Image 1: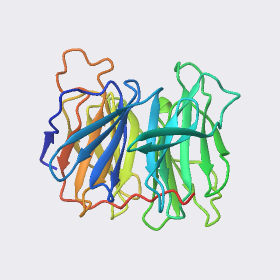
Image 2: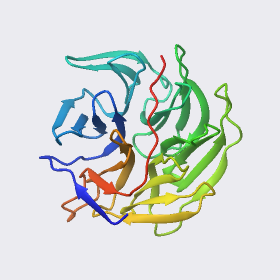
Image 3: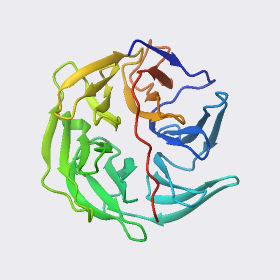
Image 4: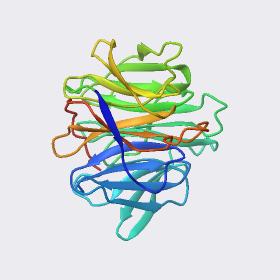
Length: 286
């Protein structure tokens, strides 16, 4: 992990998040939550495309056998077609928590969507972890989070990793074939000076790559939770990361301009050269 580049574009994100590789589009998709934008980077020619969103958008995932996406808006889950743009409400998982918004999501190998929520005012620990089975409705699986982030799955599908950024903790759950979770167990506690764990991804060797909000870097942790390497980036608030490209050998990281006065590269999209191979993202089967 020796170098990186800043992907050239005209605008930086207020709160870049949720990068995901789309093989069918040969593109990296990601969102600007506060800027209410969906972005696409063509990996063939660095061409950037964006679509304005009607409200804050936390994530997008692809759907198996369909061209449209699932997206997590402040108000709930929607289907999202891009050409032409068409948005249709699908689920409202938290009508009882009006101050919350959806935040970060991934799909497991069985095609189930796992997503979190958080208090959009950053006041209450009202965030929760949800599962959306194919053809089902969202089920609240775990509760009491300050800031949910970074679902990730071990290569063998036996473990789900999930973060409470507000507490500096990465948790690990045993993941059953039926989508049930074992007890929440502390996997990594961020140390003083590291910032907070934000979005994350996992590589083919089962190592977690975690973005450091407030720490200006991405770190790699082995399957035992030990820090094995990190790469510093020129932005204090690194928000998430994802492997992309046909060989899954290109690691991208999003960032934020929030509380980043005097940082010209804050909010940029970074590509980090690692020599490591990632895992392909799964599509929701619903």
